[in-house]
Image 1 (cartoon, one colour):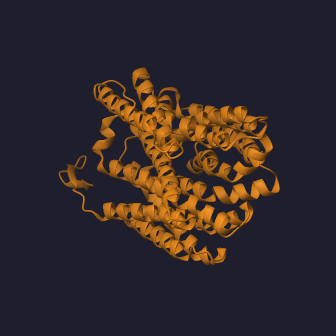
Image 2 (spheres, helix red, strand yellow):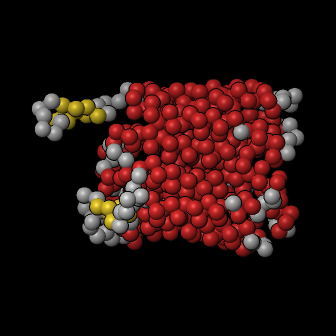
Image 3 (cartoon, helix red, strand yellow):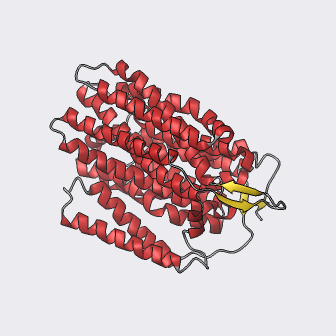
Length: 471
């Protein structure tokens, strides 16, 4: 049983907790995409080369992907609120260091520390929501939380363009400082300190193996296209996969102790299927946003701020729809809402591909972008809800770590595949069309997986001879 320590009257309101956690989560996800718009200004201001500023992006993503599983386990050990607050504080301090950077090296180091802060706080958010909300309202809460991921991904170019054009690239980082301080204050005021009441130990061997495997694989995926997938990149990818297999073997022998990844999670077919779909949809979102942003700037000649504004309909619609999508998931079933979202996003993106021609106007993409926003709002919300629906509270931290790691790796893989496809087109526009076609294929496959029949396991209901079915 979980106990709440130091719980004054104003602390523990579920919606206040959700708002605090979602704000911190949004801040870390936004920093994955918002800095892309600032790269040209950073290069000019710091006299940096392209490889250096790309590591400003890659260093953050690399650390975030590699440490999510470990951070989730640390949350189980030290308390999720403690890790969330520590991650927020570290992220905020690193943001200040990024904004004050005087050279490429200091900026890269600060971004790596920022990634560490993001890794510490991210998996705690889902675990705290599961522990705070009763099962009857968890779908709506996880729907709102999950929609933050989609809105943050889609709104990065818009907010980045506005900030860079009006205040300069340093404010892309400085803006995190007041937000981070607010999140810290609200965390200690409203978020309860949930503890399991028993001691935990950290699997050091598992930590080292998982960090090495995820770091190597993430690096190979991010840098493979830049180095033309030469032998050492392929060797690194193969070695990382081998380390991953060794990690899973180590975990299988540690299931009776305290593994980083409890295999009991994958006994729930809903968690397994939805987590896999989370990776595919993470890849699809990145694979749609990057080419569209480049099309508006390179093909239509829009400035960063105008390209960002042109993309704004998508995150705005997603933000409006997502709370209702989570509520609807509880009423009619998450899979139906998810399927509607997949079809809406795929339809909008297909229309965007057909309309993305040399003579196009940015406004012609408004309706397709609105359909994509509708799809995002209907996809992310039920994904999180269905994945965590049957996960026990004591496994919520581990489940959050696995779920977020798969989503992050999906985003990295999507970015790598997008870069490769844009390079093989016969012209820049053909490359953009080819890259945007990949998310359509991924979403079609995901829709097929959602409608595929699943076997239900029947178990006796507590205190009743009747059976209940769970799929």
